[in-house]
Image (cartoon, rainbow, N blue to C red; front, top):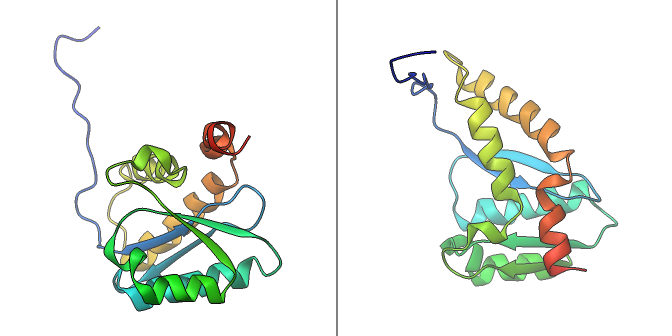
Length: 146
């Protein structure tokens, strides 16, 4: 019993990092950090995804962030043999990785006083554990694939 509203303490003193993630249920999920989210870094990340999944068919679900829709990105995906699916605007619920990001943020928000290197290392570890679960994609697969 408590007569006061509980106070949730969150970490607000963290370094800012740009995270790129690829979540798969039948290959190697990938997480990486880039200086920014510009088109060149998106293309480089697609190359990393292909390197980690050399013989797999790759379907990449993208939101409508401008660098995701640029001709250079589309050409790089074609060159790498990837299928890109652009989601309708304002529909993050259609992207399975969004549930993984939500869970990662929830876990990460409880950590305090980490250096930038520790932030990256911790995010990589949490992402590795979470991306091993297929539960984030199960509903999406049932709805859109089967």
